[in-house]
Image 1 (cartoon, helix red, strand yellow):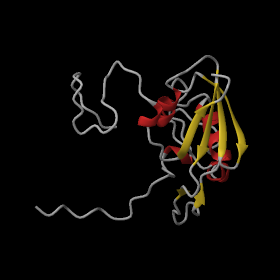
Image 2 (cartoon, helix red, strand yellow; image 1 turned 45 degrees about the vertical axis):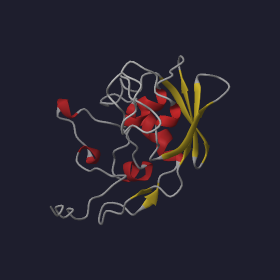
Image 3 (cartoon, helix red, strand yellow; image 1 turned 180 degrees about the vertical axis):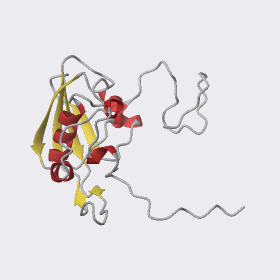
Image 4 (cartoon, helix red, strand yellow; image 1 turned 30 degrees about the vertical axis):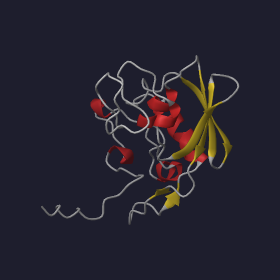
Length: 170
């Protein structure tokens, strides 16, 4: 996010929106990487999220084949985050249910109005449902208690760095 950290009306390097720490963040000031759009439904407890088509979990040789992120992965990931041992349990405690509408659309329902939900879910990490099922990582584990599974050690998306970028020329 970019914005002018000053509280005056001058917008410097901030584009359309200035940054104010105590102010409302306009929905059009957030850009989705995994979602192409999100809209509150007529019920203010439901947020419809349309996933960006073509977002891929990358191939990791010997670990998983490349595959597209779909609604089943989102529903699975939110359910997994609510499980015992999950570090994300508190972050998503306002989420009542996540439902698949179609392969690229989910509906997130909250217990109470949650106007900052689009910002909160930016830290909700999506996992491949198929990978978790194949690697006995369907439920989260609490590494603080010495319990681990395959997901404790393998990041599985959405990015993979193949080579280190070259230093910038001065």
